[in-house]
Image (cartoon, rainbow, N blue to C red; front, side, top):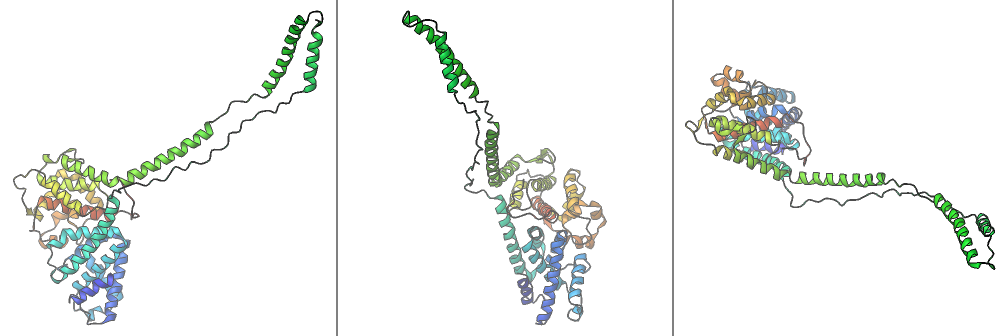
Length: 432
């Protein structure tokens, strides 16, 4: 993929190395070095991407200076080929590096696509447009695939069968009892001798008396046997606890599987509730209680708070539709970008947005997302004219709607989060 990007710039006449493969190799080596920097320091991605998008990128921008230094390391004599700072070449190198980094790190992909969707619509890319469309679509497809993987709800949930472990045998101990025959015979003889009745004189009385004595002797023997053979109380707590623990673990794992499988459905349901309620969780108030532009910015922030790093491209469209549901008020038509930008930087109701943005973006020193200026109003107020244009890369008189402003902020927030978070394994479904 990396080589294809540079070759397409060469084929379009945007980069000229005089057909020298060795020079092309130096450009590719530079792109590989820049890609390594971006993967190591993802926070640089938004600035690098915004420079790559802009044919009029200033040669003094820190990103341009850094890439030029990298080119010089790979190709000390590049000045013999290019009369001045080769902005088009450096932008091609950056794009090449971004594509390679995005292929290996989904965080980079999120940041590239987010900034591309915000900025490219305002750039005069000319012959580059076809290249940009292909590159952005390819990276966005990868991001969407990752998002759909995490947002999907399967048609069925497979849960393994409960496999109970064999319960340990319960041993019931008892003593072996043996009848002492000699003792038994002696007891019977004693009973007979104790019977002083003679059967020939009074057989009925003799039989009755002997029967009683015999029964007493036999009962004593049986009582002794019973006492020796008595079984103690059986403790079933251990095997029952083992079974209970196994069933509890199985049910817990089954619930985890269910929750994971239905997480995407739950997230979408929550979003529909949020859109219909038009209620701001961060401000604990209806969006209708704020000016429309303020409400749009708050909606971008609140949506960002509800969603993970990877979200389908359709989420931005969902946000815009939510903004369209707000009542139309006077002055809520399209306004200039600089007007909305300055308003957002001073609006006290957007304190939550500025606090979060300051965590994501440092004070701009070169090309930066618009949200970086919202996060640092002191920087915005200090910039004038061309200085501000050099930071934003966007014509400041461009007109945008409140819905567009909301999706712009949301993408900037997603870009900032992507370049701050640690990479996660594919398929890991996080909390909304």
